[in-house]
Length: 458
Ligand code: TYD
Ligand code: MG
Image 1 (cartoon, rainbow, N blue to C red):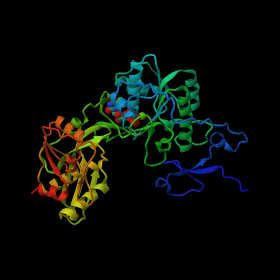
Image 2: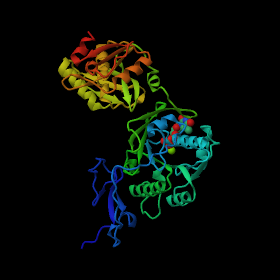
Image 3: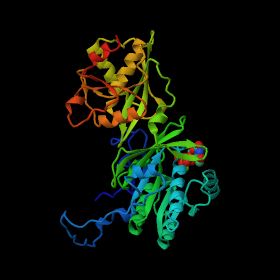
Image 4: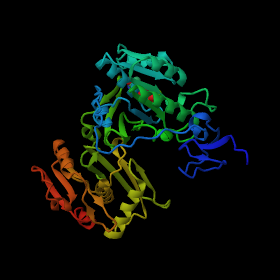
């Protein structure tokens, strides 16, 4: 029998294992992310041992199940994103770009829980920063007196030996990429180390029933293992996003075994830490200029919460350089589709025009319900006709130019009304849905297709 190679080739971005080196990972499409790693030994591959497994007891679906006693933190945005509070024994991965504010957020959570529940022991273990650095941050946040137990180490064995002796309620590991187990022969930050360290930490969290937060950096280079390899091992994955040039940050749940996903928490980064934003719509619309062409307010929904944002478009002559398209905060393919629909169904011509689209404030929108608002911003810029300042818009655009209904129109309109908007352009299938009640006090313009939309600008 051929001797088995002791080496695997592992993609550092998604964790796929190959028998041979190759330039591009077939699974995630990343280039140059595959590196040589020694095969993990005993722990993960002991199925070949002679010992037989035990028999499994099967039960029926219908039976008593445990209800979770959630730990409700003092940060309501965290409670919202986690589905009503943190579940003991659950593991939460917080991913995000370096410098976005993960350590700040987790120190605030840890100190907040420690202050609120003085009988619980809360641990903050930093592998990235020295004790002094964390202390300076705690002072800056005004949380230096919180009964948090702080340590700076990178050894998973030491952490596990210590936690075995304690009775922790909450443990923060900042970050998982700095942790290492000396039995695993790979450098800290490699997929093998990250996975083994996370596996051991998750095991003890489940055994002892404490809440475990793992911080993971997202890197595009692939030299450090992205947290994507951990996503299926943990219960909840939160992404902390935001534009460094802007002061607000969004915490987004992308996976949650104990609550809804797509829920967002909104924070503002200030001198003394992250402040929760109770009314995100007001924040995102704060710098709006009123009656300017190319600006349209979209009434969106993020998770269970309505959110109003300004969509800005700028259409200009492209001269001889070829038409440019640039999009910030939205899908560029979707913009291309909308421009194509406007060209095909309304006779507009963008082939000699540059089109720039921006979601004001740096928010990323994924809802197709923003189509209509994008189309209106583009037409408004193209025709140089501003839209009324008190108007909100929502609706999805189909390829034949039809405007389709979107979910939760009432919630969107209520939020708009609360913020002083009195005019709305909405899909005309809205009224057909008899369950939805129209809100009084707002004027509606129901619209069925993009051709009708153009006529509003004439
Ligand atoms: P940090 O939490 O260290 O980011 P991460 O752990 O994701 O790498 O925070 C990074 C930035 O936040 C840093 O550039 C400074 C800024 N910051 C504030 O603006 N206000 C504050 O109170 C704190 C603690 C940090
Ligand atoms: Mg940090």
